[in-house]
Length: 401
Image 1 (spheres, rainbow, N blue to C red):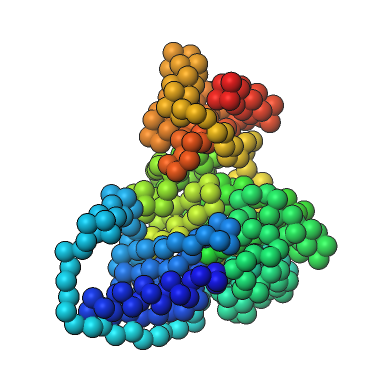
Image 2: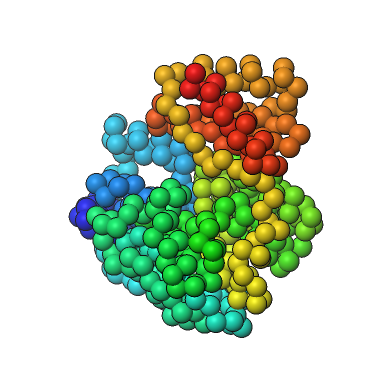
């Protein structure tokens, strides 16, 4: 629904059909609706979106047939080479374009994956951020036993109310106020392309995405005993503990959707969660869906007569800093300094699966360099608030010193 998207989509379709290939236009779509279409129809997919970025941005999200991911190693570098050097493909015929509305089938599929027929009546505030959840949420929640209080459902790619980026707590303020004002059971906040969902409990407090990962993992393990669950390396330790306590196997991944989806395919994992609010499901073509994650939370809440904060308390065991970004002149040198100060020489456990992760007895931190900016990203977690803050401040002083 960004102002520039229709012209880009028209041009993209014209380019595809000029090469002799056929196009199905599914119209306005969230990212998980695109993945649904690519999975259900078993065709490659593309959508024009800049997700949670400001209004002036735009880009293309791509996937292979069956909603399989395209990353640097699995296609993006090839596309870049074709752009700069020319494509070897040279079709002579002209393809066709047709329209197909997939929204109802998308809703049908989501509701087939989560049992919601017997939930108690719930009051739900949904902040769509003027993004694509304003298109998909009404179609989903019309079929649930929920009173919905809509916020910013009007599709508006200028994002007049706040950025459609719920990982930034300042963009949750309106939702937090509305949940308390309406005495709602739960609040849901979606990003611009609605592939991520963040929760607010009945007290207006934001829910850590790792807590939601643990809740969904618990639910999926009840349906699939002994299954594999993927988590990324900045997820809470609580995720691993809860997966193992419920008889599952927790498998660690680098940060990023292409890594998690590949690992899910290799291991047959039923579910994967990222601390950034992305949640991946085997039965959704291993793709991520913020709406499906939200439905798991709604189901867990609707099955019992208990407040959301109490339901989630067993899944929240640690204190986390959230991701803190620092501009540095030399990311590699900064990483070496941190390694020297806190690494194995200091008696701590170290691994380098993605950046630098240092673990102590009741704390850990991860530092990763940004792929696109001169930034280091820090995440810290500890058993107590005081310990977390001490580690956070010490590492930040090293990074910024």
